[in-house]
Length: 87
Image (tube, rainbow, N blue to C red; front, side, top):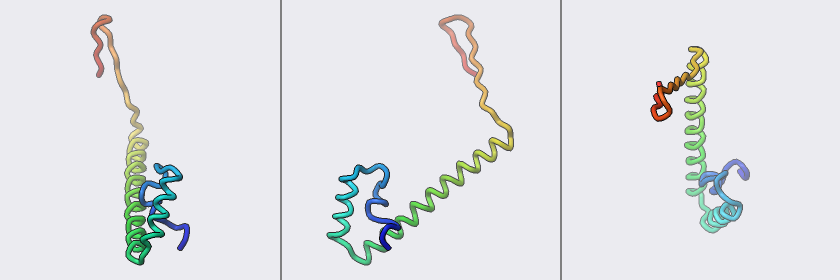
């Protein structure tokens, strides 16, 4: 189905410049086959799962931090201008 995914989307979508996306789309058109379509769908599925895993990890960390009411604390002490300690 057009618009769901594509060769450019699985090869860097947001990191690519427009001419790079066009080059990848032309490459796809020149070599299109059922196997490449299957590869695109498979790689899209993998990327979505990785992104979901990353979001779940971030959400889990956030929930733990909020539930513990944790705030990072850094203490800086000076004994003189040349000595500085962090704890």
